[in-house]
Length: 85
Ligand code: SF4
Image (cartoon, rainbow, N blue to C red; front, top):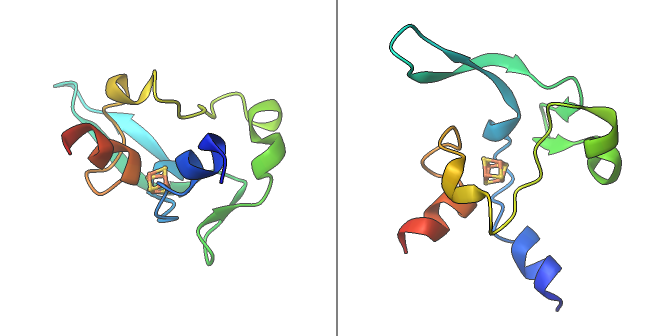
């Protein structure tokens, strides 16, 4: 298994990162009920995963280098949990 595959397997496929976020007046981030247009809400998977970064300008690729700064990832996210283990 490649390092890339191991990284991908950290994802729990919850899809929670693929819902729009709002920041309130106090700077607190809230997840809305509005999904990304490319999210299959039943399978909770991206319908254009391989092309997502080209098709959706707001999509952010998660990497070992950037996850520590992505404080909008949900508590149960497999990548966020990696930071606390
Ligand atoms: S929130 Fe984390 S675990 Fe859930 S789908 Fe997104 S990247 Fe995967």
